[in-house]
Image 1 (tube, rainbow, N blue to C red):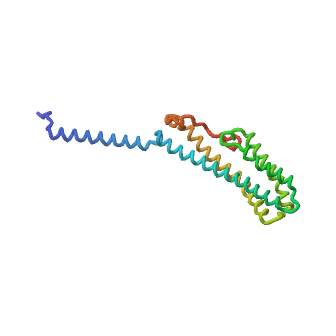
Image 2: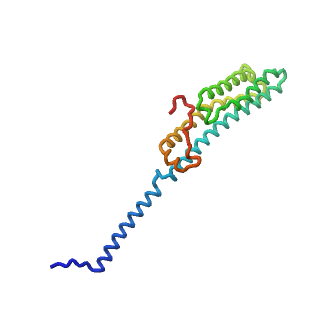
Image 3: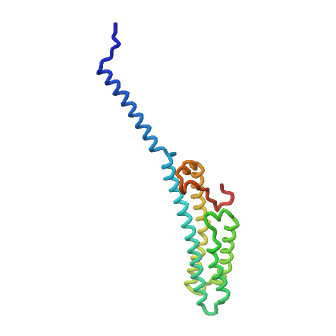
Amino acid sequence: MPSSFISPVKSVVFAFLILSACAASCKRDGAKTVLNPASAAAVKAQFDVLQDSVALKWRIMTENDDQKIGTTRLLLRELKAQPGANAAQLQALEDANNRLKTIRYNQETMASSDLINQYDNAQESLLNALYPVAAPNGQAPTENARNFVEGIQQLDAGVVGFRVQYDHAVRQYNDYLKLHQAELQSLGAKYAALKPLPYFTIGAK
């Protein structure tokens, strides 16, 4: 009759195998926790990258606009130095240029398309009035004036492209925020009250 007795050696081996299997399972579970992309730490790291991308695109865009305003100021200074310059006309253009930054939207207020339109219209009106004075019939009075006009035109032509790039970064930011808002809110501090950012694109969601 076969014995049901298990030798001590076999018991030790059997127990070792069970412990090894448990250890391997625990190790795999631990690895899953560390690499889980839905963990709060991983969500924060990815969100910070997207937030930095939005900030970078915004800075590039506003620096382009600041440079356009600055170049316009240099052009007006150049024109004022020309014989027969209309001082009152040039001063009015300079005043309009100086007002631009005071009416420019920011990342929150641009939720109102009226503010964007107000700024764009003010700048467009200024440039439409400036170009005929700076280069009548396409002929600028000095080489510096011509270079300034061309520089302003190049900067102005880049506006749409910068806005498209900004909208793309904001779309990624907003989509990620919507998908992982619970994890971000669990981090507290600045992550607890995050809201979607507005777009330039009309009708963008």
